[in-house]
Every structure is written in C-alpha cells, then in structure tokens.
Image (tube, rainbow, N blue to C red):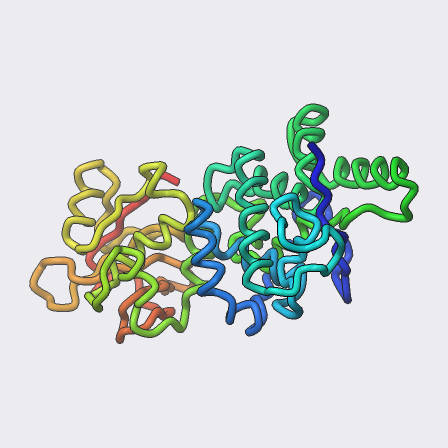
Length: 330
C-alpha cells in the first residue's frame, strides 16, 4: 500500500550529485536545532529498534526542516500519524513528529533490508522511500533491484503524471540527506574509510559519556578501547565480527594476535587500522586509537580518552610510544 509522504521543500540545496559519487565528500554537520532533538531521536530510535541509526535520523530531520517548526520530521502524511490530519505540516507537536518520523524511517529501513549504518545502497533505497512513500521501495526492487538516481526520477515523473501534479517529492532526496550523514560522504568508499569517518565525527567530545553509557555503564571509566568498539558498532563491524567489543586494551591486542592480524611498531599502517600504545614503557599496551592517515612519515590518529577527550594526534612512524597495530579485515 502506498503511503504518501509530504513533499520536501528544498531551499538553497545543491544540484543532484552524479551517479559516479563525485561531490559526495561535502559533508555538512546538522544544525544546533537538530542537535537539540538528540535525546528524543535517541529515545524513539531505541523504541523502534534502530538505535544504531541515530545519525541517519538526524540527517533526515536536517533535510526535512533543519530542526525548525512543529513537524521537524515532515511526516504528517505518514500512515503512522493517527492524531492529526494527513495534510502537509498538520502535526503541531515536535515530539510526536519525531515519534512518527522515526517509526516511518524504521519501517522503510526494514522494507529495504538495510543491514547496517554503512549499508548505503539499501539506505539509499530506504531514504527515497521515506520521501516518496514505501510504494517506491516495492516498485524499485521489482523493476530495478534497488535504488538509483535515474529510477527515482522515473518514479517521480510517473507519480506526478498519475495524480496530475507538477511534481512528486524530491528526486534527489538521497543525495540531499547523505550530505548530512557522516558516513554518507564516503558513499563510494570502502570499510576502512567508514571507520575513520565515524571516528572523525566524534572529535572534540569530552568525558566519553556517549561511549561508556553505550557500554551500559552509568559512571566514567577509561574509555579509549570502548571508543574504538563504539565506532565499530556504528559501522556494523561488531555484528559482522570484523572487530570485537572490548573494554580493555590488552585483550584487544590479544584478539588481533590470535587471528594473525597483528603488526609491530615498524609497520606502515593504513587508514582504519587500530593503533596501540605503550605510554608506561613497560612492554604492555595501555592505550588504543584509530589510524586516520599516514603522511610524510607521520601517523595521524583519532583517539578517545586522550586527555579525556576525543582528538586527533600524530606520531613519527616507528617511534615510541607506538606499540603495534591491529589490522581489521574490512
């Protein structure tokens, strides 16, 4: 059954990105107004079984409203709206809008069989379904096997002709949303770039509460290894077994060594490799981070709990305090 989702009003948006992925690196952070809704986004994401898609929900809200108005998810016409008329902007309760919008997004993610926050092919199918209505997902799968920008245009033109309207939805909705989605800027990238991308979005976080609370704690602990596990979880790598869920640094080292995925200090790492440190100079690893890049003989990293913040650091290749590297099989 086709559930119509309201048209998206586009103000000052960029032109459609090409199918080659060119220009997808233009990541734009969500607005402070959207960030203010994070607690509600988190609440309803958990309620509807998509807690790992918090950033995607925020990106949808940013595209729909920038966090403004009484219907920030622009979902008045969703079938899950049972309190207000099914007319654009009829919802007058922002929390109810988020409830309905997250429920709708959870539904289309399920219809599109999205497997993880980095499953961007299926996420694209789900996003276009959020904008056009879930009938698009069934149509795209039956006729093309999934989403493409060209079939989104075809569907929009077909529906506009059917209803006698000048237009139907946002033909470039996927590109418009993904510019606000941290992982979306690596739409054509590989797994290691997704890991780095997620870590980079956390730079500046102080105290580590999002990470140790994700672990299930209500008090602060040393959180460098938990931070790496949190980033892996955001990418779907815990469920896939690419990386383990670890609280301690030394068990992390053992995990890589046991699998033959370990290299010593003199190894030249790649982005997304896991870097371990021995700050106590006692021959034991005591800190961990994520390799961001290697450039001009320097290893650049993103680390959690470095001075109790998430920050970028750099080190000379082969030097102390670098202890070694774990090499995930992305």
